[in-house]
Amino acid sequence: MKKIVLVDDSDVILDIVSQALKMYGYEDILRAKDGQEGLQVIKQNQGNIALCIFDVNMPKMDGISLVKEVRKFDNTTPIIMLTTETDKSKIITAKEYGATGWIVKPFEAEKFIKVVEMYVTK
Image (cartoon, rainbow, N blue to C red; front, side, top):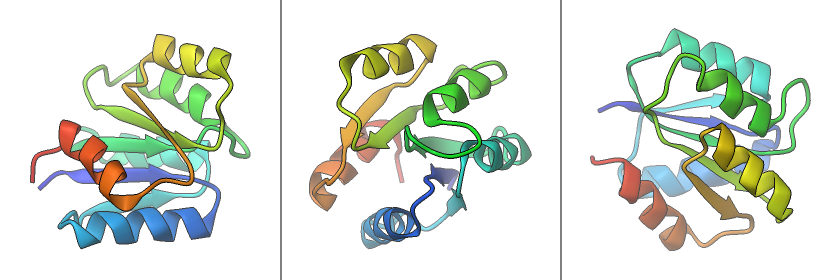
């Protein structure tokens, strides 16, 4: 099975999302704490990633910039933004750069997994 990449500067969110994914059978999860680290992880695993999940507001490189950077070399991997951000202009910008979905925190695990399942087959 291909990997799911989580990029968020909150350990709590990384843990919650990882646990939700594992509860539903998604085991191969790569984690990064900011956009720069996330970009390195994605480049190192290029071609073996089923889905990326990015926070918007992070240090070093925010999630929207990360989408833009990833789309320079990967136009096909789905990218979901997982954030407390509800600013419509940021949502529009993320989509223009190539984000494929948007989930607002806090989220219910079942609803989150339904979105994941739209993009990833086990």
